[in-house]
Length: 248
Ligand code: SF4
Image 1 (cartoon, helix red, strand yellow):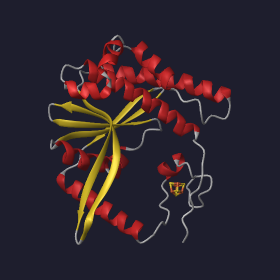
Image 2 (cartoon, helix red, strand yellow):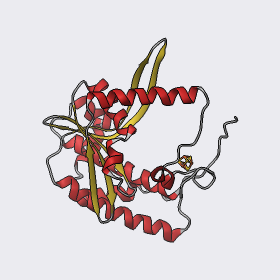
Image 3 (cartoon, helix red, strand yellow):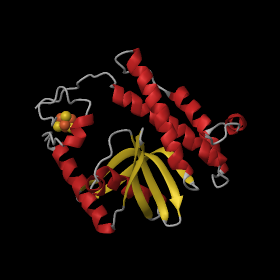
């Protein structure tokens, strides 16, 4: 079997998702800068010392968020000018609904868009190392709250409860932060409002996730790339137009 490196241009969905993620990263960084609980060394990592005062001039208000969105908007990936203008308008609406969600409670952000490495031990082999990125982690009274942003349609609670990506976040955060995971949430940003779907993972569910990761890796090492179509995945997959296994 040969592995094709299929070139593809950035899709409108990916471009829009990146615009939203980049905006919420900057918003989260501003939150961290404004928090008394953020250690100075972390503040300095976010912004150089001389930049901090000018950044702090930006209050944590809706207008700031909207300005950040316009600054972060990526024009690439749209069919034409009208599609791009629609995405700009949609993004502004999404930022308004995010702001309503964000305002609902006091928040303590401990990291934004930070990379992680998860080590999975294996018998008679070197440990597997998975890398990824958290969108946002807040601290709650019970531990860590891991939040992942989505611009797609909300999924079912059942699929969130069994989502392997969320299990990987939980495993990685436990390994890195040595703190209990209070909850994991997918935050679906839509014009009509934010849908927050939350779940938890107990020790046995995390162990099952480790087993699933080892199995998936065995398939990769055996070069078994059999497609595993799922309606929800295929709907947003950038390879769907050329994939014979896709589910429409
Ligand atoms: S279209 Fe579906 S089956 Fe094909 S690669 Fe994408 S997610 Fe997998």
